Amino acid sequence: MKRYFFILIAITLSSVKTVKAQSDINMATHWYNRTNYNPASIAKVNYAYFFSNYRQQWIGVDGAPRVFNIQASEYIHKYRSAVGFSLVADKLGVTRAYNPMLTYAYRLAKSRGWSVSMGLSAGVFSRLIDGTKFEAETTTDQYITYQRESTVSPDFNAGIELQTTHFIVGLSSTHLAAIAKPNSDFLNTNHHYGYLIYKNTNLTSINYNLGTQVVNRHNLTILELNTSIRFKKGTGLMDGAKEIFDLGFSYRTSRQVALLAGINILPNARIAYVYEQRFQNGYFRNNTHEIAIEWRILNKAASDHNPCDNEFWYH
Image (cartoon, rainbow, N blue to C red):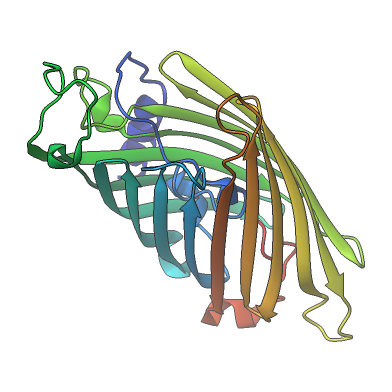
């Protein structure tokens, strides 16, 4: 069973075909949580995990994208498995999309120094185009429909992630059902993700992370760079230092810059804010704002050892 599970993921990650449709959601806070594009990342062994974020893009532009995302996952030590649920709601102009998904990940860890997890997400992708809200300058344009049209189709993501004490390496592919489909306004394009993250949690007063990610969609490839610093304070207790707040910076080759900031409002809860600016003609005055909330609940297995285990919030 496990062998077939791994083979299925390997096949889906290697499948690449041309399809023109809608693009994947664009969330700057993905450096905190990679579940939207890599289901393998839900294998967080010490706690149940809750994450939610909201993104308001291009303030001042009518019909600009607005995205709401909520996720929950739990790791089951007995089965070396994690299960999760996510829902993405995306509004862009006269279109609305909903993407509920169930996620499963299996984790291999032969030592405390490294682990490999593989994950699959399955759900549906629903899109509504409300043509009654079009305000076209040329009302006789034959390519514009003034009716409400909608569709619901199956949707799948797959991914693999390797974690060591200081490195995270991941490969994933999203919206796999779109690979063999013809061009459509209702589907999301198949995307491919690859990333490498260096994390250092050994220092007394700070953690820091350096990351790079490549995203490919049809004929478009974007590179993103990220760095963040998380400030800690000592407690004198066995469970180690506690994180207080963090600051980060991201740059995309699509000429976007993001400033990230987060604060731990409780020992196991934090809130983050992102300000994003796109340096491109027509968008310079229209910035983007994003807010995210994370919450951890330590599970029973975590009480048997140091719950920090060099993982902290970011892993």
